[in-house]
Structures are given as structure tokens and as C-alpha cells.
Image (tube, rainbow, N blue to C red; front, side, top):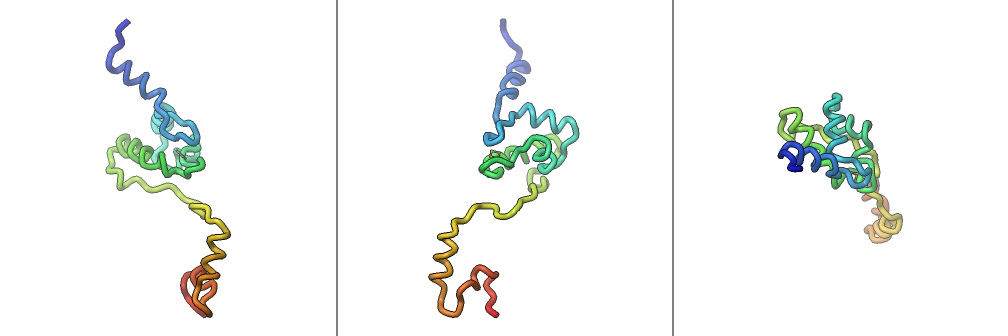
Length: 117
Ligand code: FES
């Protein structure tokens, strides 16, 4: 049986993983968009995309492109999703070394926005 180009494309899209951390396929993303999702935050809430260990570093751009294409907007106009700090884990040892290596009388100023009191 020979499949049409459209049928092959459909089959390929079904299995393309866009968010590896949360195991979400292109088909699931397109379905969510078809059901009304218009922002990255809405996709995040519906599918958990961008909420895995990489915090969306891998999939965010792909999701933005998919939304932009559907909405007919440039990717730059797609609002980034909200982030909750810390965006990236920092080891306490690193923070400790920053304090130890700070010039005398300046301990902690780099952790308080750089202003001395
Ligand atoms: S690939 Fe989507 S959160 Fe990591």
C-alpha cells in the first residue's frame, strides 16, 4: 500500500517528540493549539511542556515557532513563558566561594545587588 504525502506527513508528526523532558509530541501540541492555546504559558499548563529538568531550554524555541506559525506572527512576538526563580540551580559552595573571595568589607554585596550599605 502506497501512502500519500499528506498521510506520511501526518504519521511523522504524530511521533515527533518536541518536549523530550515531558515526552510531548508535535501532534499533542498542535491539538492543544487547535483547541485554543495561544501562548506558551497555556501550552505549559495544558501539556507540562517546558516544565521538565531542562526548564524549556530545549523545547521553548520549537514551541514558539509552532505557535507563531499557527497565529501568523513572527516568533519574536510570541511572549516567553513565566519563569520561577531560581532559573538555574546554583551550588551553595559556589556562593560560599563568592563570599570568601570578595574584597574585605564587601562580603555579601555581590549577593545583594552590588550595593554597599
Ligand atoms: S525539553 Fe521541554 S522541558 Fe525539557
